[in-house]
Structures are given as C-alpha cells and as structure tokens.
Amino acid sequence: MVLGILALQGFVLSFILYSNKRGYSLSNRILGTLVFLFSLLLLEEAFKLMAINASYPRITGTTFLFDLILAPLTLLYAMSVVKSPRLSNKLISAHLALPILVNVVYFPYHILADWNSHLINNENLSGLMTVAVASKISYQVVYQLSAIIVLIKFLGKVDDSTDLSQVAAARWLRNILLAVMVLLPIVMLFEVIPGVDGDLVTVVIMLISIYSIGYAALRNPHVYPRLVDATTGQIIDVGPKYQTSALSDGEKEQYADQIRQYMEAERPHLNANLSFDDLAGGIGIQGHNLSQVINEVLNQNFYDFVNSYRVDAVVERIKKGDHLRVNLLTIGLECGFNSKATFNRAFKKATEKTPQQFIKDL
Image (tube, rainbow, N blue to C red; front, top):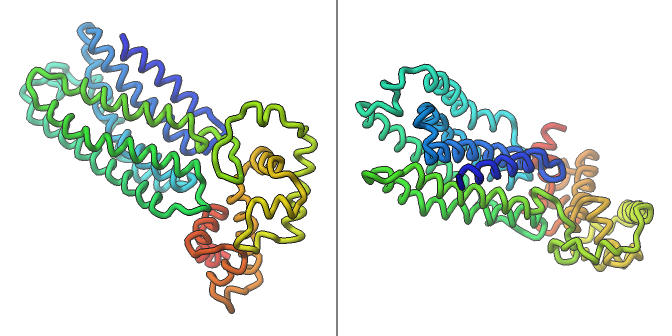
C-alpha cells in the first residue's frame, strides 16, 4: 500500500515537472518523464506486494525493460542541466530510439505470449533471465558513469559566469548518482541470494535516488526560477524583502528601460572589472532595486546580464570583420571578458554556438 501511495505521489510529481513552464522546459520534461516511468515501475511492485498479480499474473514483468529507458534519460537529464539545457533532437533520438523500440517489441510479447513459456515465468529460462538482468544492470552502470563524468567535467570548469542554479543542480545530481553507484553492487548481490526479493531491493534504492532527484529539483531555480541577489549570486527567499517592495510594475519597467539605455550608451560591460556596485552607481539606482529589476524584469542574474552585452559586442565586431585582423580571444578580452573559458562559455550560452561555429555559419 505504501509503495502504491508513493507511486501516485510520483505521478503527481512528474505532472508538476512536465507542466512547468517557468524553468528550463527540456530539463523538466526529461526529469518528468523519468519520474513517470519509475512511478509505473513502482506501481507494478506495489501490485506484487499486494498479491494482485495472483489474479492478474501479467502485471509481473510489465516494466521489466523500463530500465533501458531510465538509464539514458538519466544521462540526458545530466546533459540538459549542464548545457542550459540545449540538446539536439538527434542526440536525444540516438540515446532513446533503441530502448523505446525494444520496449515496444517486448510489450506485445508480454501480453500475448503463453504465460507458462514466458521469459518471466518459465523456470527453464532462468539462465536467460539472469543474463537479461545482468545485462540491464551493466547497461545502467555505463549510463550512470557517463552521467557522472558529464557532471564532474562541468563542475570542474565552473567560474564566476556560470549559472549558480546549474551548479547546484549538477552537484546534487552528481552526489545522488555516486550514491547509486555505491549501492549497485548490493543490488547485484541481492539478485542472486535465494529467497530474497532482489526486485524490491532495487526498487527501494531507485525510489530513494529518483525521488530525491525529483523533489530536490523543485527547490532548485534551474527548474523553478527564483530571485537571485545580483551582489552575491545567492537565492533570495521571497518574503517581506520583496513582497513589501515599494516598486510598482510600471516603475520596474521604467528602471529596466533606464538600465538598458545606460548599457547601450555607456557600454560599462567593456570593463572586465565591472562590479554590481559600479553598475548601480553609474545608473544612479539603489542596489536593491537594481537587483530586483534584473531578476524580475530582465529574468537574469548580474553575471548573465552583463555577459549578454559582452557577447553582443563580440558579435558586432565579428560582423564588421574584426576577427579577420585580430585574434578572437583578443576581441573577447577587449569586450570585457576576463578569460578564454568565460568568453567561450558565455558566448555559447547566449548564441548556442561556439565563436568559431558562429563565424563559420555567418
């Protein structure tokens, strides 16, 4: 009964994630799909514990091959987090096409095959079943390791221009996946111990890991954007500080126009050492109001906001042909970036292309 309630809770969580339009939609859809499929798996296990499969035996094994979809979805979610989150349809299809096809082929077999000779139910096929389970676990390990490597590489390149919500999401996901990797040998051990329900142990471990990822995501601004203090980059608890703000919506828009005009006229972003206080002083606006407008109206944090103007300055110079006479990195530094890594990351985040790809396409 408890697993059934948790499964229903998972369906609600997947709906919340999938229907969320405020955050990064692709990340949310991938995570929502992952939680939904796992909830189906959990529901099957609940039916088995309640002995419903005694009357409807084919409930057992319905989700047998869902792991083949869950594993690549985990990798795709990790990639969507670190790429902010732009993944090509070709890449998604490359990872999901075969697992989905295998499940599509398996389902009619599961429904129509004679139950006495079914892979799930036939003791004479126990050796084949063991091979299938071992293959599934190996498949999961490969994808889990790939996801962990993607996250570790991203976290190793974090700098002051990196979206803090991405960093928080990546760290949490990395820790969960590392914990799962540690627990996988225990799962494999229970699978071969006579009299122990290895499937239940697997489900409990997956329950802890996947629901941890799902519920933690709801608290992360990568999924549900929150106000970020531009001076510190920290998430602001939307309490009295902003609820009692004296700024009306019209005043916020006026401030936003004032900020844009100042950026275009004075081009303070060309200064690599531009600070939040420098910008507030130059515009003549209180820091608290500047932070609120950048977050609420312009939907960015301070670093992304300033870097977007720096990228525009680089693009402007490329279109003039300056890259034919001056090194690209030199142009980036002259436009306010303080390192090659920051320049490349901000450029790709803003244009979805590297500077070299942008020039080639242009």
